[in-house]
Image (cartoon, rainbow, N blue to C red; front, side):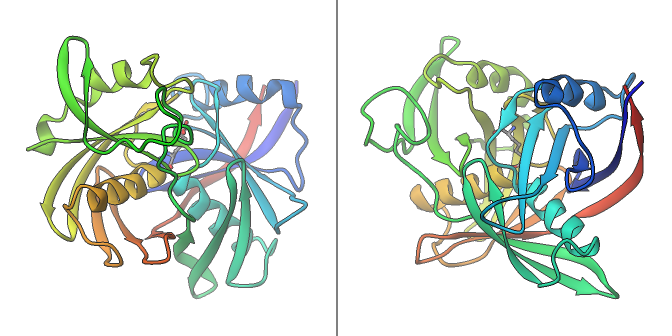
Amino acid sequence: MRSFSFTKMHGLGNSYIYVNMFKERLAEEELSYIAKRVANVHTGIGSDGLILICPSDVAPVKMRIFNSDGSEGKNCGNGLRCVAKYVYEHGIVQEKQFMIETLSGLVQARVFVEDRKVNSVEINMGKPRLSRGEIPMVGKENDVVINERMDFAGHTYYMTGVSMGNPHAVFYVDRIEEAPVTTLGPIVEKDERFPEGINVEFVEVVNERELHFRVWERGSGVTEACGTGACAAVVASVLNGKTKRNEETVVHLAGGDLYITWKENGDVLMRGAAETICTGVYYY
Ligand SMILES: N[C@@H](CCC[C@H](N)C(=O)O)C(=O)O
């Protein structure tokens, strides 16, 4: 029987099993299988997926994220904050500001420390990518998708598309409690107009500085929070004239709040909590 040490962490209830690949060895061809196994709440540990904290050639650390269905994502906002907390608290980095490599590029992390513990983290997520080609979405490669009329399952909706290194479809609703997360979410996720699938976000605008938010994540379904999704929601809201550029917006997710600013220079800043739940050894 094989085993590895893990740490379970969460960002606003979006939980992953984190494995320190500076110490552990997992076979590349087994990663998808391991993600599915550990995520299972009955027969595994229970999580939204698996995150590997890996050595990098271009930064002090690299994050890889696998959803609970075993698919590999290219970015994860809540995961980045937890990785930043982990590497700082485990002495893998000594600075309070450092770069993290992801499959979609480099981001900058800044940890806020009290009594040697990281209590919140800010990530500069870089610039959103807005063209259909970048999201990716079928159609004219360079066109943006802002409040575009789209039909799903015979009904008409209006969608804004944003990539934060991973793809997001943002829909506005009048009341967040009535958002069709579990009905429309899976239909949009697998729609053939999104060749790599898509994360689906529902947003209620409270005012110019506050949004309510729920998510159906590609590869994991309903989760308590999605960091990249919350960034996409703020970018979409600026593009739709609902919130302001260069001003912090509070996004209320099911698991708590994130503070997000789409800066004048194009970068998106995301700030919020990162928590350790437990550590253990997993046998498989
Ligand atoms: N929960 C994450 C996003 C995880 C990956 C996503 N499901 C995808 O496949 O793109 C976040 O906090 O951003």
